[in-house]
Amino acid sequence: MKVILYKITGYTLLILCTLFVMEVLVRHIPNEYKLKRNYLDQYSDSIEVLFLGSSEVHTGLNPVYTTKRSFNAAHPAQTMDYCYALLDKYKNEWARLEYIVLEVSYPMLFMKMEDSHEAWRVKNYNVYYGIHLSKKLKSNTEILNGRLFDHMLRIFKYYVKGIDEILCSDLGWYISTVSESSDFLYNHAVTAVEEHTVPPEQQRYHEMKSALDSIIDFSQRNGCQIIMCTPPVYKAYSEHVNKEQMDCTFSTMADIIEKHSNCSYINLMDSKIFKDEDFFNSNHLNDKGAKKLTQIIDSLITGSVTRSDL
Image (cartoon, rainbow, N blue to C red; front, side, top):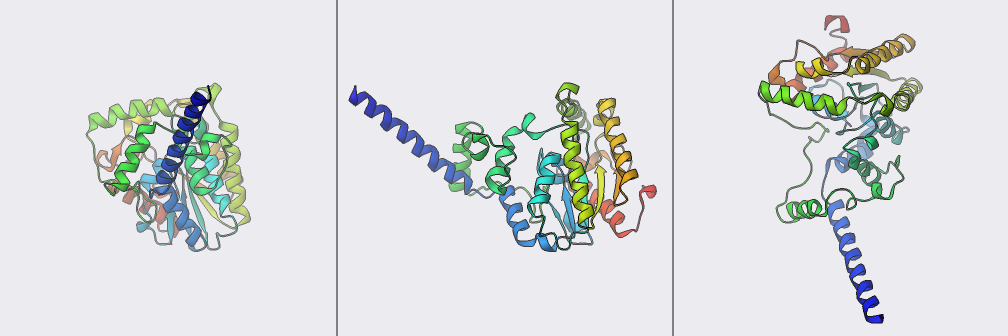
């Protein structure tokens, strides 16, 4: 019995040590969360325009095309509560912040990251930003999220092949030059809208609206302007959205800009400015589309165009 217990204990210890080593190795792989955290740690006090949102901003706004010093702090699946958490983390360091450009896309006011199929991304905020909205054990580890084989593959790619996990520019914009066919864009649109449509009983509207209100409160205390934007999508995406969910977003935006003079809203969802070749999938822009969108936002900030011009 003692021998069996010794073997069990020995195997358990070996497994735990292996997992610990893997956790350490994975955490040392350069990734976009660490890149953006390091940038904000060093330069948050010099940023004039901050881009916040999910992957639609991550891919759609490229700071190199702005007049003022800007940074893209968006991440895939980043919901409104995490946008506010990032803003709040550096609340005493936004010395030069003038504008917050905030994504208000189709799912943004209804979806919470922890409820989505990308809930595994929560650990990136706990581990790399020190933002602990989730208290779950797995949210504080890499290894408990995803398959063990995938983590082994990540370790192999970086430590053997030298491939890191940074797909964005130094200023946080996701780099893509892909332009897909209309058939691909249509099929992707149907799938994407299905994922982004939240059943009424699962909607987190009040929680996400509260986070948005907190962002607005922050902006008012710090003398910032907020430009809320519904980014462009491929026409089939727009055609398949749930009308009630989308209308709720529009009515919320109308209410906010009526009540808050420092807030403005621009809806580019069906904008004719953007063509098929500006998308790399149905709700994400490629480099050409990102240049267009960023220049539009920059023009609003500099005053060279107004919302009515668009």
